[in-house]
Amino acid sequence: MFLRRFLPDRFTCALIVTVLLASLLPCRGTAASVFNVLTDLAIALLFFLHGAKLSREAVVAGMTHWRLHLTVLGSTFVLFPLLGLLLRPLLQPLVTPALYLGVLFLCTLPSTVQSSIAFTSMARGNVPAAICSASASSLLGIFITPLLVGVMLESHGQSGLNWGSIGAIVLQLLVPFVAGQVAQRWIGRWVQRNRSVLSYVDQGSILLVVYTAFSAAVLQGLWKQIPLPVLGGLLVVNAVLLAIALLMTRYGSRALGFDREDEITIVFCGSKKSLASGVPMAKVLFAGHPLGTIVLPIMLFHQIQLMTCAVLARRYAARPVELRCDGVGEGAI
Image (cartoon, rainbow, N blue to C red; front, top):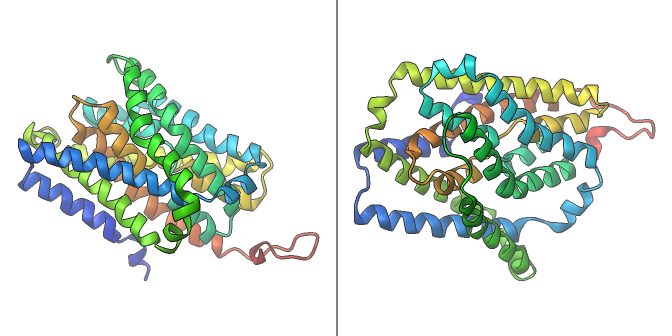
C-alpha cells in the first residue's frame, strides 16, 4: 500500500507510452498536418466542456474569500516566476538552456482545476474556495501566462511577446470556454453526469499534443540533445521548485492568519501547474520552437506534484477533527 502511493497512474503511463511511440514512430508530412488539426479540435472541445461543467453557483459561493484568492494567484503568477528567474544561476547548470526555457514557461502557467479541487476535498479543506481559485487561475492564465512568457523570454535573451499569441490563445481556449458556459443551461447536467467524457477529452487532447510535439522534436534530434544526466537534473529542478512552493504556501498562509481549511486550499491550489492548459498554450506561444523541450518539464512536474500532493492530502486528512466554538467539527461540514 505504501509503494502504491508512488506508482504512476494510468494517465502517466499513457504519457510515457505516447513519448515512446513518438520516439519510435514519429508522425511527419501529411500525417503531422492531420494530427495538428485533430489536436486543435480536441483542445477546443476540451475547453468547451470545461465551460459547460463549471458551476456558476460554486464560483459565486467562493468569490467572497478574496484574500485567499489573491494569495493563490500571487503564488501562481508571482512566486513561481520569481523562483524561476532568481534560481536560474543555481538550477540552469543542471539542464540545457532549451530545457530551462521550458522550466520558465512552467513557472508562468495557471493552477490545475480538477486535481486542486480533488486534493482539497480529500484533505478536508475549503472546497468552494478551491473551486473558485483554481477556476479563476485557469481563466486568468489565458491572459497572464502569455504576458509572463514575454517577460521570461526577454530575461532569457530571446525575443519578447508576440501579441498575436494572445489572440490565438483567446480564440482557441477562451472562446470555446465561453461557448460552453452559454450552453451550460442545455448540456450542463449531461456533462456533470458524464464526467468520464470530459476526462477522456482532457487526457486525449494532451496525449495528441504530446505526440505531435515529441514527433517533431525527435525528428530534430531531441534525445541526442538530452542525455540521462540532464533528465536527472530536470527532475531535481522540478522537485526544488515544488518543494519551495509547498513550504511557502503552507507557512505563508499561516503567517497571514488563515485557518487550517484555507491553508489546505492555498497549498493545493497555489503549488500546482496545469498540464491541461500548459500543453496547448505551448503549442501556440512557442510555434517554431522545439516543443518537446518546452513540454517535457511540464510533464515531469505534473507527475511529481500528483505524487507529492497525494501524500500531503492523506496527512492533512488524518488530522484530528477540530471543534469550532459552535461545537461543530470542521470535518463534518
